[in-house]
Image 1 (cartoon, rainbow, N blue to C red):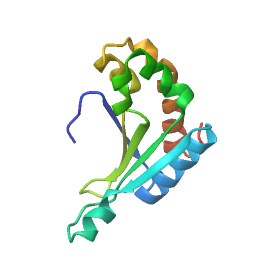
Image 2: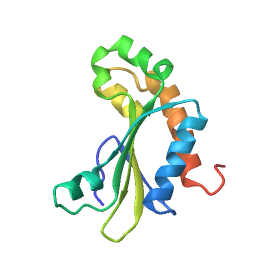
Image 3: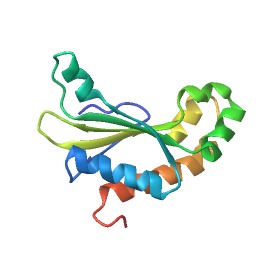
Length: 134
């Protein structure tokens, strides 16, 4: 797997369906709203194409994202937050997301402006990828 600037990718010990379920539970337990779940593999199958499990979860909270958009409204293209649960050709499950600090810097804002978002997202990811959330 090739690294992509600003993207954090971590392995999951669970399969794609369980990882996605755990991610959604972690998101809602932190008071964040799930706005959409996009099943790219199902979309591919609908047009006769194969794609391993690949699902995007879009979630957030106006309290976390609005201050960034107040500083630079174009950040709205990056928000709400997103996480991709996907399976590679070796059937290994991964969870990928854009680092909010990198996003802030990309739009000319200090990384510290996204520290709160990054902290919450890191808690969500840790809870998703560990057996008991600790």
